Image 1 (cartoon, rainbow, N blue to C red):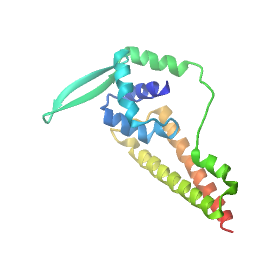
Image 2: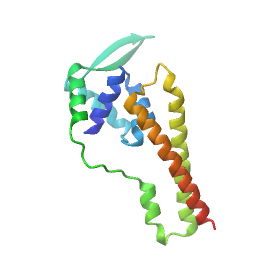
Image 3: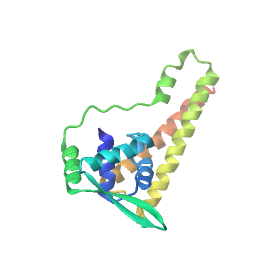
Length: 173
């Protein structure tokens, strides 16, 4: 259900092509609401069918370019959802689950999982830092609310990396 509103929220910032929606999604929302790329276009078609977005087709360099734009009805649906009661928060982290349940693994295997997790967190932090650098760009879609999320994510990732390094030091002793 929230993928619908994630897409509406991105389009509320600016009209975008499917590719740009996915790119912006990966840099922002993906951290706390992951979706598959394969689910994006069916969601866009459904939003179009519901009248929440419109499709603008144009020819550019001999190729068709499709841009999606939010409608007034889409803005109302997004606003209604933003003001509605939020369901319970649930976060899933497979690495955390594996580390938590790793008591029967060899130390080397647990350390390998932790190092892999650390690497992924460092990659996420690099992505967030590049997004922060893009804030002043005309292509940036960072708004007041999303700016908080980007800053929050940076701080959380920094702390997670610090704790993982500390845990790895302890594992290696």
